Amino acid sequence: LFFEIEQLDAAKRDIRRAIELRPSDVWLHDSYAWMLYFGDNRLVELTEAIEQFPKVGCYHHFRGVSQKNRQLAIRDLENAVEYCHASLEDWYRFDLERIRASNHFQNGRYHESLDSYNKALELSPRSAFVYKGRALAHFRVGNFDVAAADLEKAIELDSRDVSNVWYIDAH
Image: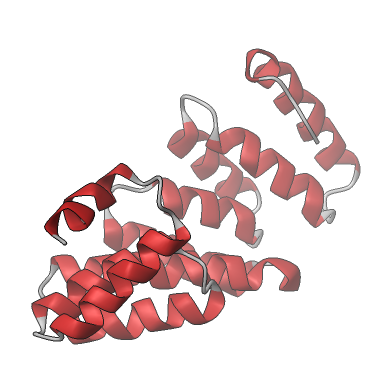
């Protein structure tokens, strides 16, 4: 399903009508969740969708990745994994572990952060963002060589990321 951002409201109306006709169609729900995610009121609209369809994982997933509060995000992503379609499970688990890792890091639990970053990389081994996060966690626990290797991998995967400039300049 493709839509222009200017036609988002009309597209959301159409997809809601399709969901009314086929409420068990996972792909219709996923398309609708994507549309809500790009809307201005994403948290409100995704919460309404969760209230209407509490066991459809994609709404939990998109609300989880939209949350600023990491505890709420983790809860939503755990629900997303529990209720998701099998074909989406790895994607949802990746986001769950990525946000868990960030939460652990922010709370000074660097070893737990490393565990979650490792799990995220098992699910998506080409994520420069996760390599960079894991590098910072390794740095905090004194694994400087491993941190450098992870930063090198992040740069290899995404050399255009301007946040890598500080590292490139340091060499």
